[in-house]
Length: 69
Image 1: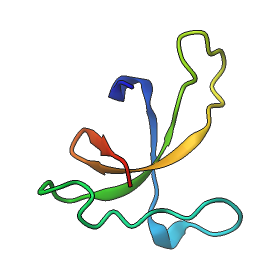
Image 2: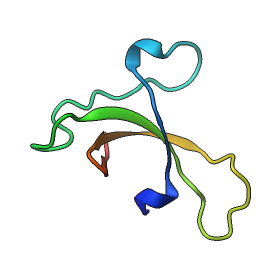
Image 3: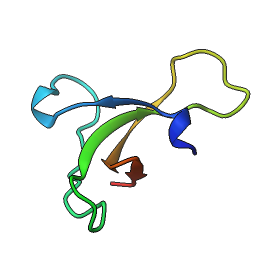
């Protein structure tokens, strides 16, 4: 997955409420890179996908790299 294919929505943990999954703890998930922040990203289904409504998943981000929580 390329970073250019990801529409990023940065959210703070304090600003989240209601239904849905909880943001992961990204402490130490980005190795020595800091700051490691929690982001919610849209994941396109592939080249055949049409539309702008893609599934969203939590990732840890540092700089322009995404890491699995």
